[in-house]
Length: 156
Image 1: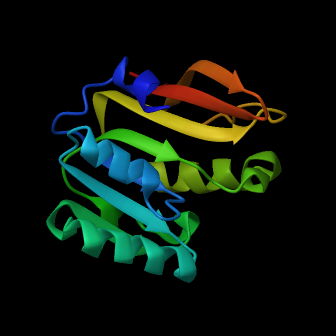
Image 2 (image 1 turned 45 degrees about the vertical axis):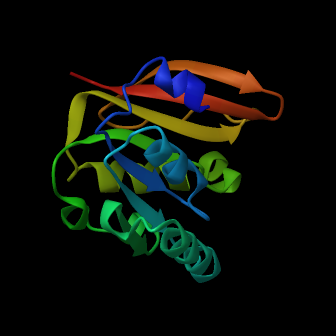
């Protein structure tokens, strides 16, 4: 995934939003490639505790913000700051097929600012079509067995 992202986006100094972060693997990888900071959003308390333990063990407190909440319940104003350059999303696959992800993202993204060359990467089940996301245009989907990575760019 990250070699494909790196072909489209310079990680150096990037601001990253990691939604459905789990233990933080995607956001940590972005930091290891030069991202300036990451905002992690994770609803599961168990996963958030593991993510926080990872943050502490890696000494990354100043470069990250952890929000423990459902994506559809976070006011975009809580994520204000400089524009996001990269959004990585690895949701429960059922949220994609049910349409819940689309509703959550469209609500959250209304209040967020993205750089003009931002990139959104969504991991989802290959059996599901990539969702339509307001203010984003699907540019490519790459299938890897049962999983597909869909890449989006902001609509100008």
